[in-house]
Amino acid sequence: MKKTIFIMLGLLFSVSSLFAHALWIETAATGKVGQKQTVKVFYGEYADLGRDSVSTWYSDVKEFTLWLVGPDQKKTQLAVTQGLNYFEASFIPAQNGSYTVMVSHEAKELGGTTKYHFLSSASVSVGKSAAVVSQNTNALRLHVDDVSSLKLKQPIKMTALLKDVAAGKKAVTVFSPTGWSKEFYTDENGAFEFTPLWPGRYVVEVSDMDKTPGQHHGKDYKATWKGATYSLELK
View 1 (cartoon, rainbow, N blue to C red):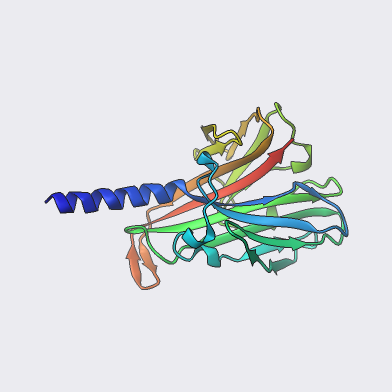
View 2 (view 1 turned 180 degrees about the vertical axis):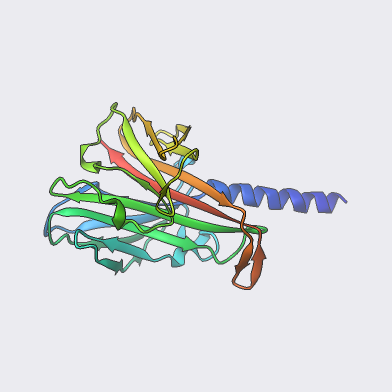
């Protein structure tokens, strides 16, 4: 009996720990035509300022695909190089406009009877261009209109979208560079705002639990958890 209880507690801890983990993209909010733009992808618990070693990433998450969509709406896969606790890629903007980098990866392994879908995106403004919503094709995503205009101690308005529709009444967590975090809820239009108080990188995450059952890699699941992140750096 005691052994069974310990096993159940271990499974609960494992699932809880996984929920706390997220995949996120780090890149500069602005770029220049003809100059290399570096992009890094991390996995871990940003609330603890943790970036996990790639060797410990959950399931096959490290086999994600990184995509780039430019002002011409062309979608291109970016080649990634593995580092100790991140993957790195780069691209060179050929023209002014908005660029979006994104990841959408369903982990091969289930967490109990739940399928985990990790999503992340970031926008790059070249020539002071506003972000284009349609560039991001992720099923769940966060959007900021103009990443180049964001400033410390001024409200930042974001919008959450689920399958191209405003994701209303969704919990959103903002993780600060100091380890501070706070939960918000989107309004009926999928919008919310927060005010950054400290310089550094912020990671914002919105999640959704879809209780539609199905099969994934030959295994039955009862629900799909989606977690989408958007990170931005303020100086």
